Image 1 (cartoon, helix red, strand yellow):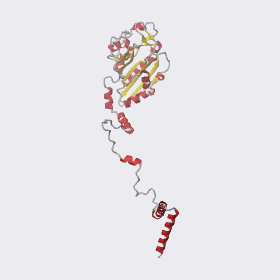
Image 2 (cartoon, rainbow, N blue to C red; image 1 turned 90 degrees about the vertical axis):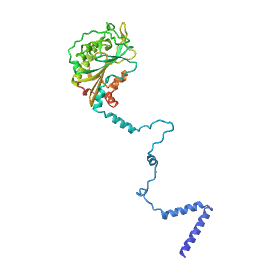
Image 3 (cartoon, rainbow, N blue to C red; image 1 turned 120 degrees about the vertical axis):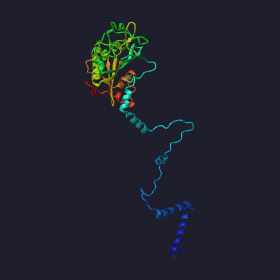
Image 4 (cartoon, rainbow, N blue to C red; image 1 turned 60 degrees about the horizontal axis):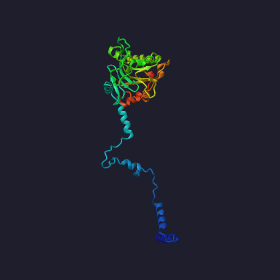
Length: 333
């Protein structure tokens, strides 16, 4: 009987709700769903360890491990992630001593980058790039070894036009009464072990107008320092030249020879796995400053001249060496 009474009460209550909501069934159904939830909800914690995690956007993407197919006819390879690039860089940086030695022993290892239209002259002791527009070499590059400066050859001071330059070079008389020295790029004293090579340093392609006190002062001091390094380190690589730019004043009767405002000298030392480089940038004028005042990163000389030094070095090594010049790393500097 009590069960029948409860059932009748529920029926009448439901009819009352139905009439209360104007005959609409949705509110009545919603009410009984709420009542049902009171008795059936377990109020389980959100971190229930037995509950399978709901999929999220991140999880859905992570599950799809297969790369998307390329569009029809597309040959594009999938771009590596940034992590892959970093891995490649790390692998590139791990150059073995044997591989670095092989690179350094290549012919022309020490030469700057060469363009297809560049006018190159190769001599026994050095190589140069000549620029007819300025009647000067943009750079002279050579290897300087200890035995080269131990010779007994003496300079003869016979300055000569360079027959190997197809467009012709300046002549010695272009400097007459100009007020400028015939300054060497590759110094004669760097080749005292060979009469031929020393003589070739007096070709006018290896000569630039230099202010006398500069040529015989701070520039000579730098040349002596580089020779001291060759003696100390057994071998260094040297690239030297003027900073060539439009609008330079000129000297000369037969030829218009540009007068550089600045000169540079870049030196590299390699003894695998150790590699270091240094650059000097000097105004073409007298100076009493120490050589350390003229030390700059090789990158700075590259920006000024447009010359790409030591391009055969692995990029991972070249970038580091050319970004910094530390005077304290070099003997007696």
